[in-house]
Amino acid sequence: MRTFKVSDELYEQLKSFVVDPFDDTPEAVIERLVEIVNKAKSRWSPFDPEVASQEPQQPPRPPEQTLPQTEEEVVLL
Image (cartoon, rainbow, N blue to C red; front, side, top):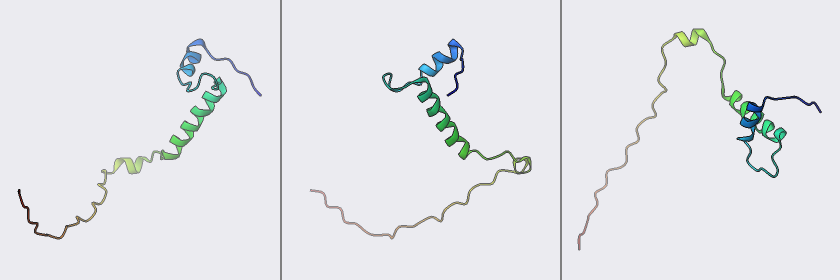
């Protein structure tokens, strides 16, 4: 296991991410943050300047569904 030092300011920020003060250690908080970053990275796509220079394309619109026309009788009492 490695040990590293963090500034007091960073430590205070890590404490703000504590969910359960009885079970969350600094390592547990850092592990949770790493998991969040890894999930976010899987959603990122690399920057491609050729694609960025093209006009944005609108996603295709789904065909509009029409509901069958039915007549309904309303009776007010």
